[in-house]
Length: 279
Image (tube, rainbow, N blue to C red; front, top):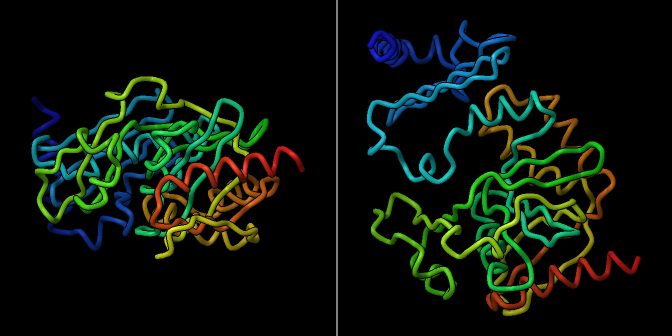
């Protein structure tokens, strides 16, 4: 009973003094230190707290029914990012697909086509890890980890093109929200929990039917991964940038130009895997 009252008073204080008390990425000034991490979101209001010593987190919102699609489909982002970092992992803004032995991290700016590229692989020999957020590790070898089983798309027309997934999407959302599907309904064969990272692909959608790829420098790929990760995570900075550079260093990078024929996307990624296996 005391905690909701305290959080309600804190919410009102932070809203009133937002500029003075809240950092641009949500960290609460003077309540963010070596042990306790705290963050806030507005509209609707929510708090994230994490005690690094006890490894306990607290997420609070006034009404769970009002949470936007990005909180329902990718919950606890702040808390997970703090916890994973202490365990040696990095929360990243990226999609991922792969097989038991090799995986591809798909990166790019919002709207670049990462979600469609990852979801086009669901009805193929590739398995799905992420369309938006996942975790990576560098040691002992680069590895990719799934965090959520959700998929998110804006346009009903895009959902209709993914015939296997179409029935899973809730298309009742308003135009201001993405439509959500949860892929566990398709069974375990569709999803993978983790894959060894074999390549990183910078995704860019093109209007031609064919999906193609070409080698690209890791520095260019980093520009498609780092800013979008930093913007969405509290207290992400130089340490995160160095970890991402280390992750990319041993991996061949390509620009994946995804065409309108969705069936070509998984076959092209498989071609990349085959080419790398022969090299």
